[in-house]
Image (tube, rainbow, N blue to C red; front, side):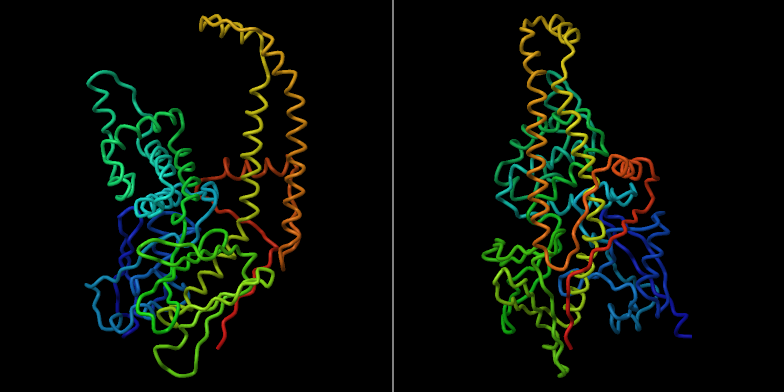
Amino acid sequence: MRTKQKRRVCILLPNKQHLDCTVTVKSRAQEVLNSVLKQLGVPDLFIFGLAVLRDNEYLFLDLGLKLSKYFGKRWNRSSITVPFIVFLRVQYYIENGQLILSSKVQQLYYTELRQKVLRSQSRQQEALFFQLAASALQADVGDQGGRDGSEEEEERCYFLPEDYFPSWLIKRRGREYLLQHCPALHGDLRGVTRSQAMLQFIKEAGGLQDGPVTFYRMRQNKRERRSSILLGVVVTGVHIYEEVEGKLCLLYDLSWTNIDRFTFQVVALKTQQQGRRFEVAAVGSLCLPELVFYTHSAFHSKHVLRHLTDSHRRHIDTRDAVSYIQQLEDMEASRFYNEAYICDTADLRQRLQTDNLTSSMSDCSAAAGTSKAWSEEEREEEAEEDEEYFTEFELCVDEPEEVFVDDPAEVSWLAELIHVLSVDGAVVCPSSWEAITMEVKF
């Protein structure tokens, strides 16, 4: 009879909406995820995971474990009228929004990044917040309408600064300053579609220091009362910060290739101290001592280690796709760059006459004459960059040599994958990369 007892789970989404599902007492986290997928109408959440709030910290659920592991005795004693709260949060940040083929999932990812920007404390990146606000406005409201006279005053007040800037920046600059200058940046994006603006925001947010990162608080020693160390899981590896007077000071920036292993130790004694020791070992070439920190519990250590392992695996699995997308973007940028030096003298003469301008056609001839020389210089620079890139990968430990695909036919395959497939399709990126070693010592 106990197996038939029901429990209500409420899943909070990044867009402040919620989903409800009913499960049995012995249900596992996977059943909740299946319900979320069905209600959202998507085959896969790709970069999202289910999380619970524990010790003021989000821990991502192991889908194979029973929900009772996360809610304790309260799970067995409660009734169906009391909901248990689970959060749908970004578990794996990505470098390019085009990796997300589902429009619903992409919108959720954009929404959570928006919230991260509003909570950001990267005070040294003030200019970036204005760029992000402009991209977000273009994604939310589209093109800004141009008006004159009294309507211009109303037009510049079409948004609330609190929705696009962190509170400290509003306090520093003032609402009037933001309302006066942000519309001009928004106007520069006229013609950019909302979906393109959303992708631009996702890409720009990747440059924010505390944007696309999941933080875990740790202590430097067992007796420290306050957790002053923040271990941040980012796309490319791990950032370790120390919080000093409310400000984050970067101590170590470790890419995945610079990390030898993560370890947490579980001692035999059944005390609160077991499993709290968390170690980060860098590769020998960095000559760094082994970094030792302490988490809240063995439960925390286990889930942090799982998140690190899965994040590294996801980074490797999507690296080929990111490389393909970057090649497409570079090819598109190169095409526009080359077209800028192709002169149609008849068209140019007509434009000059229309605009009542006078200009010598020798400038056009000079541009056309130097186009070939500049193209040769570009090819030489690209060759040098490729040589340096290969050299860098030769230094990577325990990773096979990467094969770069420059065949136009294979690049066009990616274009078909991204732009032709259904938006709710799934990306399958086969990979032969081997994950770095991570240990769990008992």
